[in-house]
Image (cartoon, rainbow over all chains, first blue to last red):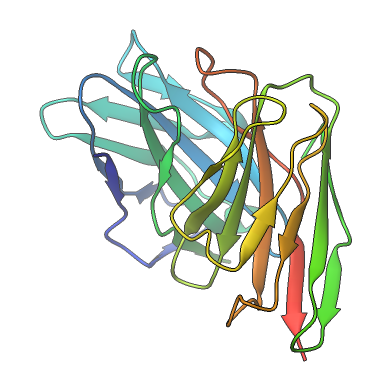
Length: 115
Length: 113
């Protein structure tokens, strides 16, 4: 079985400050890990993914995430938050080919960036 | 949202009615998915299809039905058996099991009056 935990329902940060949105996972074998962003009444937009290689993954809009195998974490980060980053963020995991290709999503974290 | 369209964007249903949500993709993807999104509950899988004329139940299939007669289309019917259908419905596609990233449509918000 695979699972994802996003321990914070909401993260508040001031514009210009660094932000972190947390994600931990459980999966058999090596994981594929994803972050998506959702704006109100819209579909999910892909931000970044970890498949293999460098543990620090860079994605769209200045976001990055660090894969930590020992802590089974994949936290989303950005050095300087913008008000326009305010949205709902989802972490997802699936096992690599050979296992289920049905990803499991976390419950989402609402990011609020204050001016 | 590129390549996946969902219609309508907003849908209102009276109790006891069946309604069908449309999902079309021009990405030539093999796999398609339907998710339901409720506040604070993330995405829950309703049905998925790996190939044409084949589909499997997800975690919350009761009260829903699907068909996959064409590669590009995966309509979802919300039947009167679904007791609490008010939600945001998302369709997604994936090129194939050996690929990784899902692509999502813009969603349909269904409200039962």
